[in-house]
Amino acid sequence: MDDSTLISLSKAGLEHMLSITEEFYMLNNTSANHQKYILISNSLPLTTTSTISSVDFNLQLSLLNSIPSISVTPISITFSFRFLGVWFNIKGSRDFTRKQIAGE
Image (cartoon, rainbow, N blue to C red; front, side, top):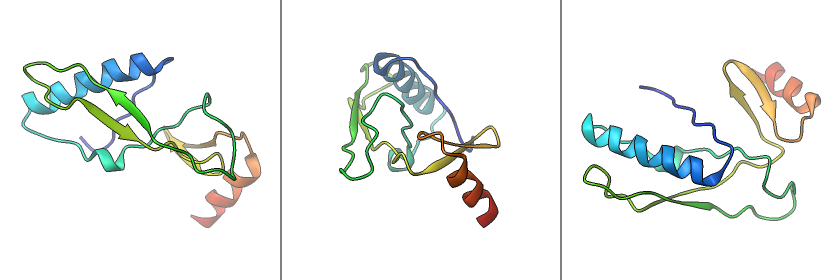
């Protein structure tokens, strides 16, 4: 498995899915590098001047999951990302996305 995408309407939903993924990793004797996790959200402050603090996800502990929480830093609104081969950014700016595509 190379990349995974989790989509949820709420933080609680993401916490539930992250708990399941940790159980999956344990069952399959694999692991994920939590430092590489990326959080994309349109419900966080849309600012480019202040530092964005990380978001803590509290996971459900079980026989298959011993990780109590995962901390993920959201991307900046000026950063673009690719989802299913299409470039997006939180600001909705097409100019930034066009520049990034041209750079590649």
